[in-house]
Length: 177
Image (cartoon, rainbow, N blue to C red; front, side, top):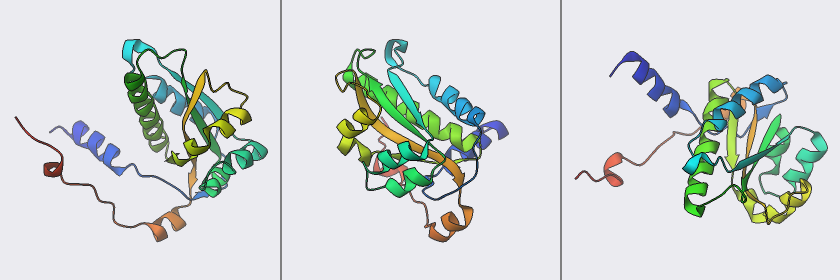
């Protein structure tokens, strides 16, 4: 394996969910770079079925926080990327959901590349109607897929709360034919 390949694999495996942020400005340009990473995610027929509402205003973050049990994370993040599936751009539900997953992972990897912390909050979809109302988006056209909270990680708190990161061994879910 080349040095470049091993560096890239190390980069992917070192990405982790950050749930504790410090209040430190994150330049808009950083978020635009992260969104650019998302933009290049694969999608069936290149339909790119995503819509993003970028939330930075404290009042807006508070409203989002009220829609999830993880509200503290959303309020402490500098930005929240609220991700919707654009139903009018969709053509096949399974493929569109796969594309949204790839899009969101690209956003997480982009945040990691920028040295920022990020976490994907999926539980908020339990209150998707409330979130659609916040952004005045019709639920007939846009379906909430989750929120990615982004900010400067609170390294002290993250290290203190860090537990060993584990993953299932390959032989538990891979079969070779």
